[in-house]
Amino acid sequence: AAVTAGTGPQSQPTPAPGNTYQGALSMGYYNMSAGDAPLFQSLAQNYAISDNYHQAIIGGSDPAINWITHGDVLFYQDASFNPAVPPAAQIENPNPQSSTNNFYTQDGLLGGSWTDCSDLTQPGITPVFNYLDSLPYALFNNGNCAAGDYYLVNNCPSGGCPPMRLKRIDDALTAAGISFEYYGTDWSTVNANQIVTDIQNNNLPAISFVAPEPADDGHPGFSSVSALESYLSSVINAATANTTLWATTAIIITTDESGGYYDTGYIQPIDFFGDGPRIPLLVVSPYARPGFIDHTYYDHSSLHKFIEKNWGLGPLTSRTRDNLPNPIMSTSNPYVPTNRPALGDLMSMFTFSQPTPTATATAASNWVLRGTT
Image 1 (cartoon, rainbow, N blue to C red):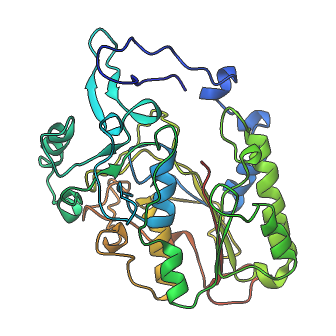
Image 2: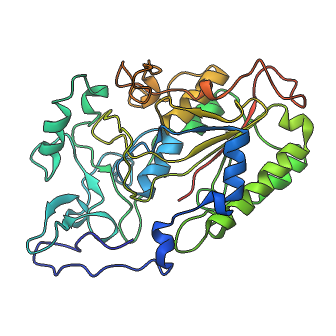
């Protein structure tokens, strides 16, 4: 996408536009009636999809994918993993540079990545809370900004982020004795293609998070929708071919974030960090409600609520949104919870009492989650 941030103080020149090197694909339009995205069309017609699932933070890929694993925003830490202050040039400053079309002063890969939202004197913080405080309901954890913590609200700056520790969903699963694996070299040493072999060899853990390798993840610039569909087909075909495994399996397909596309859908303010725009979510399972479009309000924390519901676990921490209640939705406006803030647990996308003939179990026990970067 085009560069929209400066590299330093307001004296810096206006940034030059970027280039995705894919022409119109960077803002692609896909016509399924003409044969585009055939796998996604088939999955939507035969399984369940959500049209009200959201990225959990208004930010880039790094904090979004961290939310899939942590259910929270990471904060800047020193070598002993204590809260620390990042370099000044890495602190977010959304104030516009003079003589520009509202280009941020410090933002993203070219500038700020961290913000202390507990400090109303920091650039951009007060206007956000002025809006949030005007809402007709209370924010989750009063905005969820711990005093003195600098949160990663955009992608890591050039050179990367420092090592950070925060409880992850796999920490809770390991403590409960539930098997788990990360597939994909974006977040582990296990190649994403290994999951196909593990499915075929009946070696799949109870819960797997899968990030396809970059060439297969569908990201503009280095992958494509057809490459992603090919990868998903290999995983889905392996799962359905193993009838014993398939009888207790669900494959949940989503992305980390929206890529910045404009969206007319409702976005529920939950805390300082989000929610963000809608993103795709499909459930492929013998228990998925076929052809069902779910309007329940969800975000990435719904993945954790789903796991916790299925395995009888509690919320990750007192800060994580899996503490929120399930939404109460009205027929007059099915997209906006009446008990805000609220997040669903994905259970309404399933019908466990009516599996397909190949599925005999009464509850799902193997789940595959996917998040691209």
